[in-house]
Length: 121
Length: 121
DNA sequence: CTTTCATATGAATGATTGTTCATATTATAA
DNA sequence: TTATAATATGAACAATCATTCATATGAAAG
Image 1: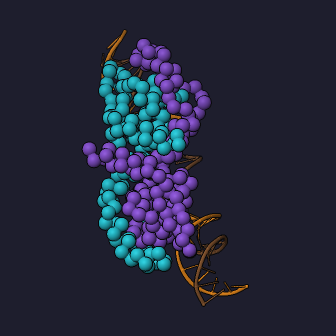
Image 2: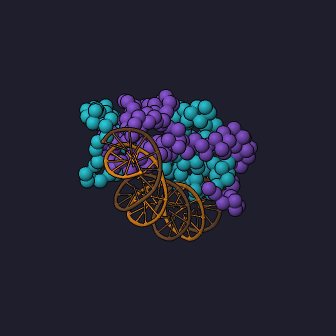
């Protein structure tokens, strides 16, 4: 992440507010929490995964329906679903040989909608 | 993004709902929009950038204050600020030799808070 | 049990990306 | 103008990642 070598410090603004770095870092979320936040957004940061999630906005879908809808291979979709599953963004249920995927919860929808809001301005 | 070769199709579920891929893809946001969405979330998908944005939650900061707060080099911070600037997530103003960065708008806060909500459950 | 079919996964590969190091830019102070 | 200080940037490198291809798994039908 970063070296623990000497880190440069100091500029007029900095020197006139020597308390700032400490005071800011005290109000920061924990390193753990910020790391998890980044990991969460990383899941949304790929257009294949976004397209999968958007497809699941409509209804639950089996893997090959997603592949067909997005015009991608079953394998590529399956790999991405695994990542979305591990990140608890999608859930699934078995129906015979088929596995049906759906959005894990409404946060997924909310976060994506928030992103759409930001873009459309 | 994907090959235009033959894409496999078909499973019982799929065959019993042949209209699904088309009907789902018609309700999808445009490819352009989904691409932009992924690009947006990519900006939040790095822990250095998340830490920078969280630091700016508190107050506007110059580059070396951010570097000092996060214990990283000026160069690393500057590179990431460039990415955040290009993505319109931060704005800046000059004050002498110093450049002060701040959050571009409240969407940034909202999106991050939405992410925090998701994590804390 | 064996075959079939939907899905999952491991290895390989090319592409993208974050950090470092060295250097450039830009504004101020001397 | 020259020197200094804050920030920016280009090239290089290592690490991460998405897709492909080949193959494995697991449920169900025969």
